[in-house]
Image 1 (tube, helix red, strand yellow):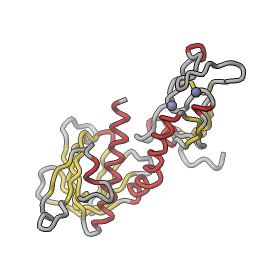
Image 2 (cartoon, protein in one colour; image 1 turned 120 degrees about the horizontal axis):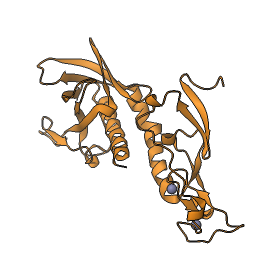
Image 3 (cartoon, helix red, strand yellow; image 1 turned 60 degrees about the horizontal axis):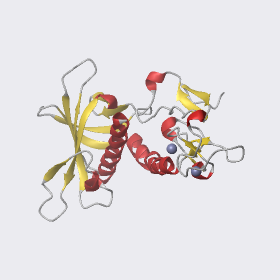
Image 4 (spheres, helix red, strand yellow; image 1 turned 180 degrees about the vertical axis):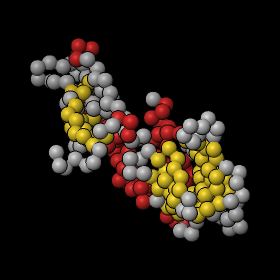
Length: 244
Ligand SMILES: [Zn+2]
Ligand SMILES: [Zn+2]
């Protein structure tokens, strides 16, 4: 088992091999639980094309939604990092589309978040601000902010997030608009306005009072803007998971 990274264990589930943290409390906030499989006796027919199952037409379960399909409707094997599968797993058409979109997050945005960006950070209503690098921790659970001081924000304790954008038409460079979390077209990478900052509310450990954190892009605006766009995408994944 020498190939297993620190603090992780390989687990064999009916759906395939999974690489999980030793301690469940350290699960990535982006991770999803495996679904319950629809019991065999409850699905005599493919839930997509209605083909009746028999000895030749065998049933297969989608690893993402747990529903039951014929081979034709559930033939795609797609990576599913949110359930920590080591290899691509069988998924229905609907789920494989979602998983493919999420792969983009894992391939691109997650790497940007781990690499970090530089921001001018203001805590609460303080007059003082500090230039800090902000990055996502390796287990995806915290934002680490490092400057003269250091503090961290646990993602699961963030209650709201707003992305601040720069207007890009001439003369509007100073105007900031508050864009709601799910209004994503404002900060697509090629969009008309660019993410320039972020306003977070979160409850620090052991406190019931929400704290405000304001981050504005420092010198390297391009890197900061990409980082904010990635954070926005991450927040969408987290909020979708909370809604389920
Ligand atoms: Zn089918
Ligand atoms: Zn599915």
